[in-house]
Image (cartoon, rainbow, N blue to C red; front, side):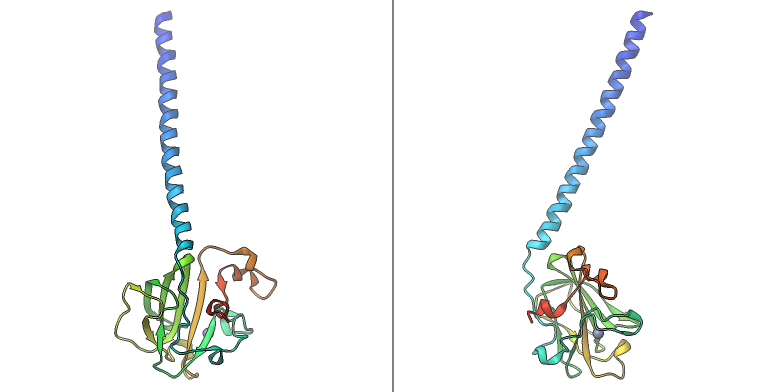
Length: 196
Ligand SMILES: [Zn+2]
């Protein structure tokens, strides 16, 4: 009887130990996954952005310096980007080396392209002219991805590129007390990005 219960105790202890070591292995795996995610995140920040103004030949004369966060701005409340004015058909170029995530048509944006660049930043190009050719999956900074147009809610307005730069990693120190100021943790000022 005593022998049997000893065996039972031993067995249950063994079971506890097996369970614990299984948990440890799982934790190690989770840790590994976390490390991989962290390394990927860091790698994204180490890739050079190779910045470019997204309209060929554009300079500060082609946008209003107060265009970013201008208000009131229709249904959006504030203008979360920059409008770069140029003749219809002017080449729109990649503002960074980027992976093209989306190319299609949206109600407000018209023909749009969305790219993912270094630092986990989304680059959004809107109101593009109808373009039958599709952008490749990977584009280099300065490479043509479309043409300035008047699609979406730019219809009837002077041709321009609406460009927004969005950080997928929140940057809370950029938030301020302006209207929707908390969104500045994500929407970056493209004019600063252009180096002006
Ligand atoms: Zn705009």
